[in-house]
Length: 385
Length: 210
Image (cartoon, rainbow over the protein chains, first blue to last red):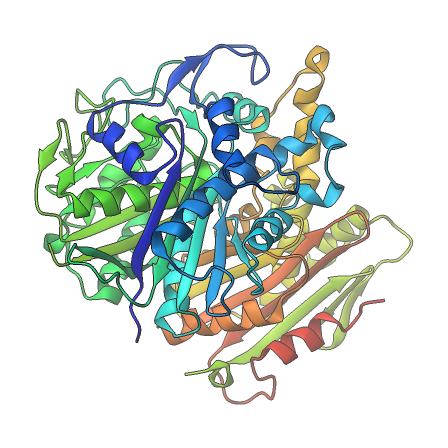
């Protein structure tokens, strides 16, 4: 079986337009989340992270693209353009496949003022994937996964499997979602949004911050020819709680199954895991459910963080975004502080990282959970130092 | 391992006011709108499941199709070994439009969590998992058209890796032109000639197309 190595990484977010810039800001414990007062989203102030339009436009101009693109597509083009130049792959090659993850894609095209600017088909996720893949002149049929908040992890796992099975040599995996009135008003209707930046795993957490981002990784069957460490996606699994469509299982059963199956599939044990990138949305139920699941799978002492304090919840982008940040944490042997956490607020004594630490990270676990009762667990491994 | 090791042990096609299972017409209700057809189908199935009436149209359609698929055929394997691999073109756009109309007009602003939760296509897999206690793998793909190769290859991949013992794969789509649900139960089984392949999936998908 082939291996799937990460050979290119990018994040387009409020914390920067390259992976390095983003990671530097995370290590400096800077957050992109602010309190937003803008009635174009909802009548009340809410906590969210928004990409500056002018900066995005400037970066997009560098691509000298001829056609007209939506704001989300511009984020994607900027992100993918960067990873392709980094990795040096032939994006148009027949052995390269494009895999995308998103929950709402171009949903903002429902807005009356945007509706007539593009062909009606443009609102479809498959169309977004087609338009962006087309820019890079790739002829293989792109794949788009839309599986709520685990979409990004599913996309990375799906792409890694294609490479492991020898179907392609390279995969460009791009996760994206935009901060829109649609999403903000919807989460607000659930009373799930915090007015202040979110506090994952903290005693005073009171809901999510929403964010927007596009994150991309290039996976390849061959690691980069340099002396630095290389991160491999070993694999993982997904599961369903079969419990409730909008709330997580109280017992963490679904996430426990996903983690246990991932360990069994990859022949990894809990004590080999050096770091967990948790889902950590900062809703009371999610963080409690995750703490129970980590406790039940022997991961109570494993250092963990949630990157949601830095970016807010970026929905379909989150899994890819957190894959990039986990990869950089592993390569830099850095455990980044779980921003917003100060007083332990879950019923199990899980090890939330309260300040940055330097530690060798050889094996990491990335988990996610989402509406529809879905859970995902993925294992990443470092080769070299 | 390849797709030849797995069989389509049961399938349903729900389209054009017809519900067909394994080649036989199970239910027909003509000259009504699509939603009335699905509700009539639900009553005909005689399943007592009040949550059905809270679901959005896409989930209702997926639900009745899954009921028929699994009516006399429990998938092989433990609950955590039953995987769902679903797809469509429009994601949840039908309900997205309904939801958006509740926030678009600021003088008539009433966003509802009961509607918003259905603005994700994978919710239909959640509903089916709750109904049938399936705990296995979930993946939802968006493609412009029914993609037999994608469903066959991915189903084979999770079966051969040991992640699942059986897979319910399919396509559930609602758009301006039609409502259609086509579901397949894929298992490792010998005594049927419905071999899992892109061609078999596409042949069944195209059965009652006009």
